[in-house]
Length: 132
Image (cartoon, rainbow, N blue to C red):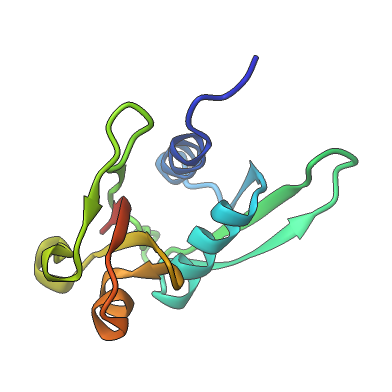
């Protein structure tokens, strides 16, 4: 069976793993998912990620991040642009998530960027997801 929205699948796997306090989660890999994971690592929401060969397309193993009390770095993660309704935004319309405490992830002509990076680069694009 084919998957309609692989990015939503990645975010759901992360959300489910955080709910049961897993340290790592495996996700089928793609270049876009790796770019999203790279933005999450740069912004401090995950510890890191690695690509693991599985004989097919490969797996991306994401290290989830928790503080010393066991509180996850990611409290909410939500898909914004969906296959049935794509959401795009200009640089002036790039949203601030929780007044700057969270991030919006955008797919731009300059690559996958966080909202802060997109404002700095002065580009808009597809509004993929929000993370707080």
